Amino acid sequence: MSDPAKVLFDKKDYQGSLELMVDMHSRAKEPEVRRALKLNMAKCFYQLRRPDLAEGLIHNLDYGVDDPNTQIDLALYVNWQGRYDEAFKILQSLPQDIPAVKFNTGWHLIRQGKFLEGFDLMNTGRDINVFGSIHRYPGVDHNRIRAPRRGDRTAVFMEGGHGDCLLFARWLPLLEKESESLTVFCPKSMVGLVRGMGHNAVSESSFSSVGFDCIVPSMAIPSLLRLDGPLDGVDKPNYINVDIEDPTLNLGPGLKVGLKSQGNPEFEHEQFRQVPVEVFESLTGIGASYDFQIGSHAIRGSKWIGNKINSWLDTYCIMKEMDLIVSSCTSVAHLAAAMGRRVAVLTPLVPYFVWEGPRWYGDNVLEIRQRLDGTWGDVAEEIRNRIGQ
Image (cartoon, rainbow, N blue to C red; front, top):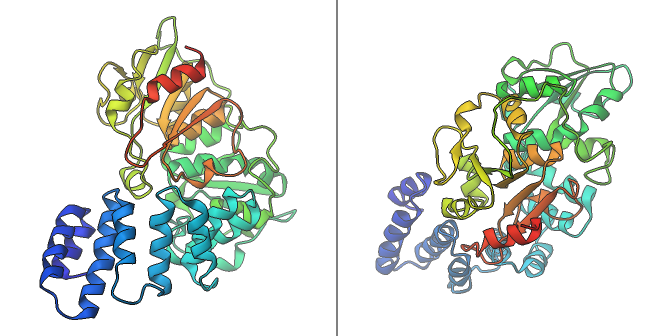
């Protein structure tokens, strides 16, 4: 990718980057330059939510279509059009020792119900910085990363986005049972909630390997403990229960619906989880609607309640008053699901691994899958039908 086009791409100006490369391609004579431009134009089309055009560019390469890296990209573009089996077949045809092949194959195996085998492969994504976030914990003694044994002083560091932290917190009681002591390092805003769950929690910024026999990265728990499924070693799917007095927000009677229109912008875009705010605005007639968005009021027709949230314990307390939560695959969705609250999760055509394969949560979770990339259809009508309104 040329320097100016790369600068725009890194700034997420994919349209600008694409336009530069189209112009360059029209003037380029060297086959290698034209090929490189097509590959990078395909990456732009993918980010612009046109995997079909990205796939077309791969098939129209002058040469080198069989290159493993090109085939990995092709599998990604095919998968994002919903052709999962075809994408899996492409990955299976490639050398299986390539890290990106391992990681992407893991998603497919989980989808096929091969939970542990798939998770082992996804866990290798650490090698290419696409899974977990061990970099947030400098000074990790890698020799101590293992499953805990009786008598161990165990440190768990919560990884990924806040949703991942909440997701993998399901196994904290199991780790505690296997250890002499357990210390959980997590984002500062989550400390109160994890303590309310009964664990010794401290801010991730204070992490040190000193004083611990065993260190457990949270997103590696299924692999380290050799778990057979999302509920293996979990007492119940609604595992987040804090003994706290009910909040007194006086929200009034009637159906109360919490709405969360977006999560971390980086994760939302990279995993195609963005849902137009208009979709959430169409839901405000289902009941009294409350906007959980932090920072600003985003959803017209709802009451902004995000201004009352300063921590995950606040979110927990407010969520206890909701009858239904509607969100894309954000951390709010994971908290609601783990609390046992009724939650409708809007997932993209190719969802996060949580929504493939075995169920991670109970029947309180309604997954509404995108049927066609780029469109969401009448989500409000589907939610009404599925909750009986």
